[in-house]
Image (cartoon, rainbow, N blue to C red; front, side):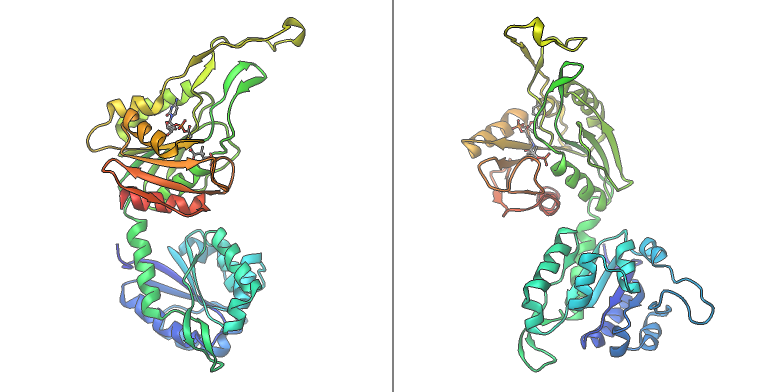
Length: 398
Ligand code: PMT
């Protein structure tokens, strides 16, 4: 998928590299994109709105209100219009304001209203770039899901040599094209995702559960949807919420309920990714009333096996369907993961180990290894679950 027909908001802040924004806008338009500019007051010192509006054929937005008639320039409308926002050049000041939500200019308010992915290309002097404060702000933005187009090294406006130059417009355009290529590769796909824990009731107030938060599965669901897939997200109890309209969420409580929904939905999907931590057992008997301590000297709860959702889907999987499982292990990690892939007829299994710091339940990060049926094994460094969701989809569908 090219940039043809894409709506792109180009944010320009006050750096000498602003002269390159003119080429960037031109290149984007040549590729078929429509470009709207939002520029900071400092940005206007470096390149004029007249130049940018002549190049893009659209008025350039900079002030909150028109000085002619007081009408409001809506950053909200721009957020809804855009398929993507790229801030190039992004100065240390703009990066800091974006990271901390300091909405004192139209560029930052537009960023805060943006519903689409945001890219930024830093541009500044080398010492400013490597300053812990700038790096901290870039890390915050990365965690917020902003794509950073790394600065390059070379001669800077100060005539010093070092890292801080804005990436060349041609390379920025390439990165945006790549993004749309990957992004939309799931356009016609329907994907089932399981997420979160299951709760197995003992009585009306107690259950057997586990520490899964649903974060891994929700990150996968959001990433699939942002690539255009229709997602059915079957999740156990979790306070997480979803934002993409392409995701149909079905809440369940127990493994049995998750099993029933998954079995019904699976025949209509192209792929299923099973990240839920499903309880393998449930109490044989669920008490109708709250159990009293005084009624039991010692208490034994007999457990009975739950259905294995993954194995059941593995049995009915058609050749054109993909089945991807997870394995959460504490020992003999590779061996156990490979044996689960075999038993449950997965095409891929994603191993995460509780022995790895920062991996597994509850956290925003995870560390995974993906095994495929054809014998491939690929490990990924410790990353945000949101980032790993991208790696997983690139690997499985790429
Ligand atoms: O939710 P988070 O806090 O973000 O944590 C993410 C996670 C650690 C829960 C996730 O990354 C993960 O590892 N999920 C699978 C956990 C697990 O139950 O693994 P397992 O090895 O017991 O199960 C193997 C596979 O079979 C899994 O795909 C599981 O969803 C599936 N299964 C298991 C039992 C069962 N009765 N039915 C199943 O479908």
